[in-house]
Length: 228
Image 1 (cartoon, rainbow, N blue to C red):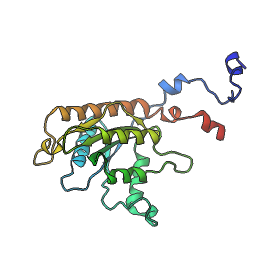
Image 2 (image 1 turned 120 degrees about the vertical axis):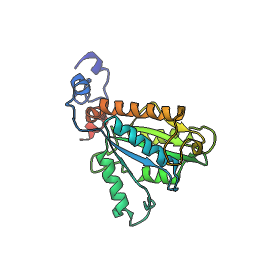
Image 3 (image 1 turned 45 degrees about the horizontal axis):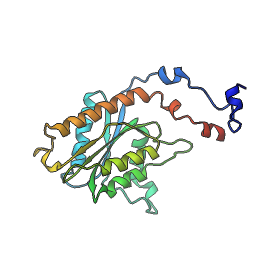
Image 4 (image 1 turned 90 degrees about the horizontal axis):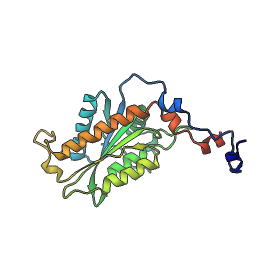
């Protein structure tokens, strides 16, 4: 035992691994398009959070990504007794398992993300068997507001992403007075807000390509090795 390990009596030296640079920097690289799940937090006919998610999906596809938008219409409340086998719940679970990165786009309502957005996040399981289906996946957070710019919803979603062990990218998007930022066809107008969404999507793609193949190693933890 090295002198440094001798000073750590509570650590199992056989389970404390020095970083493996090969696993970090040279993992076997996947060749398929990065897979992204996009969630939005409003069911209004002209839902700006959905329009933002759709624009993000177009950008991800242009950068070489594979995207799926989940339509939360009909998703039951989390505590419904019969909801575990609900088709919308199964669909969401399958999409979470399929994805390698996510975009969460919510309106800000009463100073927070919407209940619909939180319901979708609450339905994402923290474990499937021994696997956490969200850990190691990348996440970008976006919000729209009816008034002046705010960051309450993105800050909440960022906290939840961290709780779910996701790699939440540094950049984020907050679109103020969203009703002014889209044309009659639902496409976002050219503006600094649009440019910021492009920034976020570019960063999400880069972080996903950088980390997806190393994710199993990145989330391998001493505490969990002790319990095996």
